[in-house]
Length: 166
Image (cartoon, rainbow, N blue to C red; front, side, top):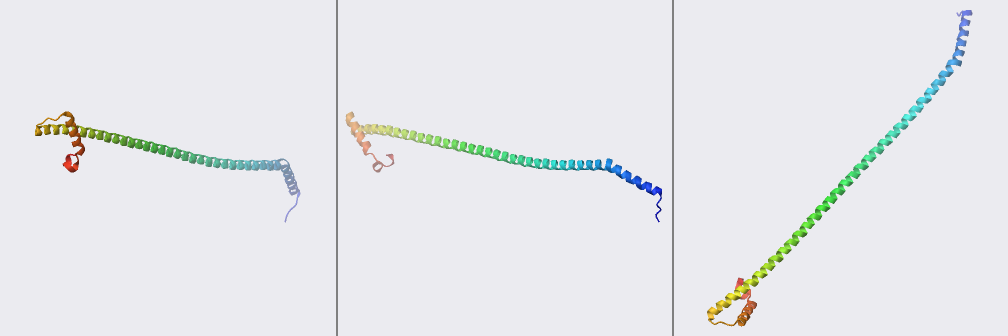
């Protein structure tokens, strides 16, 4: 059985006094410190979450800016390519026009030379024809008559009558 004596009662009273002293001087400050610590930890966690959200937002913004910079760089590159292509086409078109102009000038020069050669050839043929006619006829006609006969001969000269020489 339990023996209740003065020592047991003194221990119970000591224990109750100790509990009252601890409750008054230690328990409340410890609870206050724990509450303050809990509040501080909760604030730190909330702040960490906010910082994490801000970091995520900044990262998303950075990635968006990188994407936009790449799009702008691609646009600039495409524009430069288009400009280069336009310049190339303009240069090619200018070269074609210059080539066409030079070809036309060359053809015109050839035609002028051809016409000049024809005129010279006809004049030489006329002179030779007159000289041959004089020899054949052995009669010298006057210059006006000679010129008139040559001009008439040249006008009537055609491929049908004289073949490929015309």
